[in-house]
Image (cartoon, rainbow, N blue to C red):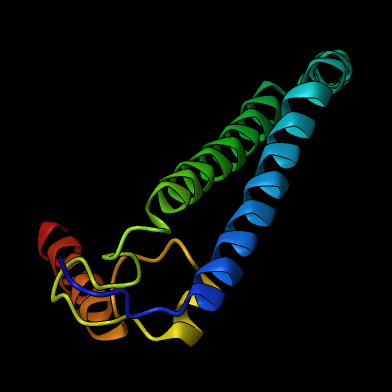
Length: 132
């Protein structure tokens, strides 16, 4: 097994940042789901009066997209919290190089170094343009 490339202080900082992000996302989802029932009912009443079924559907899709995005972020944060004390945490999943600590501070759940992430984004961008 490889030796930790992050200091215990760096790991603690990243773990604390992940826990804060986790709490924030959980609160966001709770707020979305908790207010959704009341807001949804009021919205349906208003939209029926205005006869705006398309607007209602668009609002629903936006709400669902926000929830999906928050759920995906929460999943990534939870996975990172499980890995934070693993010696491989902070190493690029593609090339194995250490991910810059500044990058990890910005997003502790990141899985790739800048170079590999750029390559990943370019290959997906090229794949999309070829499929059009």
